[in-house]
Amino acid sequence: MTGNTAAADATTFRKGNGRTDRAPYDLGTVLDIAVATFNERGYEATSISVLAERLGTSKSALYYHVSGKEELLQRALDRALGELEAVLEASGADDRRGNAADRLEFVLRGAVRVLVAELPYVTLLLRVRGNTDIERDALRRRREFDHRVSQLVEAAHAEGSLRADLDPGTTSRLLFGMINSIVEWYRPGGPMDADALADATVSVALDGLRAR
Image (cartoon, rainbow, N blue to C red; front, side):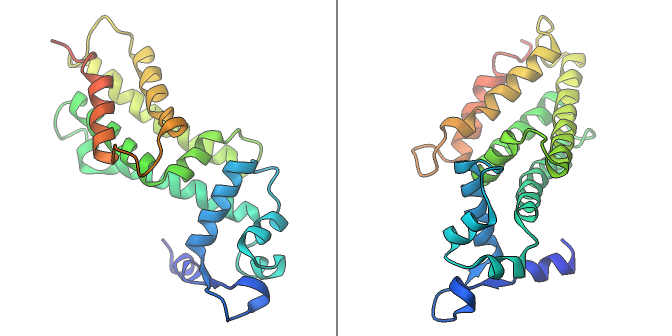
């Protein structure tokens, strides 16, 4: 994070036209509300007026701190993608540590934990269709993430860690489908926390794939 971004993140938003008799919003709270609104209404159908109304502030006050809803979308997608990309960069995904199947398990667990921690943000990411330059760049980064996970699947097949009778491409698509579907049914605060969900996902996804 750059110094300018860090400074921007520390900026507070106040309800109304700069009124100080109400609790201020920080940028994180504004982003949370914007993402929730994008998910509820759709990005295209969400205007700055709608966001200002949700925040209880004016459009001019909102524009004082962000350039528009495009910046909010950019920040939201960067947050989701940055967390997912960090999983791949972590030591457990390093191709010098352990076999490919173990690294794949590490990445799957990490992806599930990110999904739980950043559920609204990942939900927004998975709904992106590439209608703007921001969305197209997000799709490019998401494809790169998927490609690197697919490479792990292929490496696990090649080393004999996964069943030889299963096609690596099909295996990758099934894994992506299982993890991505979590956003449709998982609700925070339920009986299953991030670690339990990661355990269940890995058990279902990999126990039947590992070579015996």
